[in-house]
Image 1: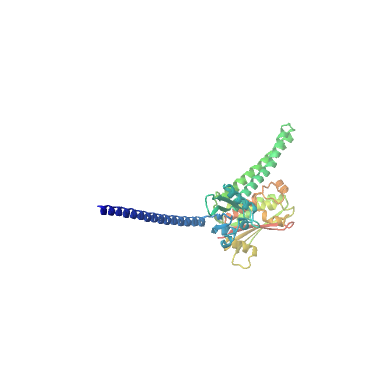
Image 2 (image 1 turned 120 degrees about the vertical axis):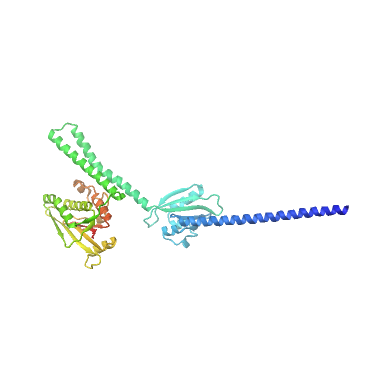
Length: 401
């Protein structure tokens, strides 16, 4: 009987030991499987992070607890023109060389709040936006930093501000003049004076209407909403029509207005109305700024990129457009010319070499900007060569058939 009891106790102990060992093995297996699952998840997360960083157009930096860069993506290398191998281990201030960016990262990490600012790296035309995203719960890394190149957006914003300022400037003068004239009319001046003032008001309103029309046209061109009707066109006939239209104006100022057309001349593939508009604008400007007894000549000729006798400037413009054959229309005058420092800016919106003079001439500063857009919509080019006191030559390069 005792033997049976001992045997039963031994079997019970053996069962308990076996159960304990089995439990240990199951716990070890479960821990092993958990570690494998966590490793797979970590690897997948790492791969996901790397794939996301590679897909970003923004530069990405991973900052460790010592405020050192531990990771940078390819976009950052392209943005800052640095080698990724040299970035790792650097401080933010060493990479960006901007104390505001460095201070922002430190402030964001200390406060635990996302912070952003813009800055311009030294000796660089870029405008960058930096955003710092703290990682307060991570043991190894303390922040992710994103860098975006917003140079184009900054230029657009600057252009918008300049546009508003220029429009305000152009409208302020006629509005002030109209206000003064109306106040004078309210005082019941003599009829002949009142009639003259009404004529002045009409002139100012016409100037404002012209400005608004040109702004609307420029907006349509820049937004691509203007429909162009390209067709084979005889440029020589277009030039002669423009000359005939403005000849009375030139004769009133005692100016000689002629054309020199080199034949044979191929047809041009252009929108006749729009190129006619460009020619009228260039001729109007030449008439305005050429003194009495001066000359204005329109030269028209065909050119080829392969012809070595083609002037170097025209060959350069042909290369820029990729045209093999083209027609060059050059409006040359003996006027007052343009200062060398101003030549590159004459095609800017609202730009005027002499604001007082062009205001008196009725100019808005938009004509050449519109002309440039119209010519480029044709796949052509427009440029100016000028010497102050010795006249200007505005040239068009138009595609030939």
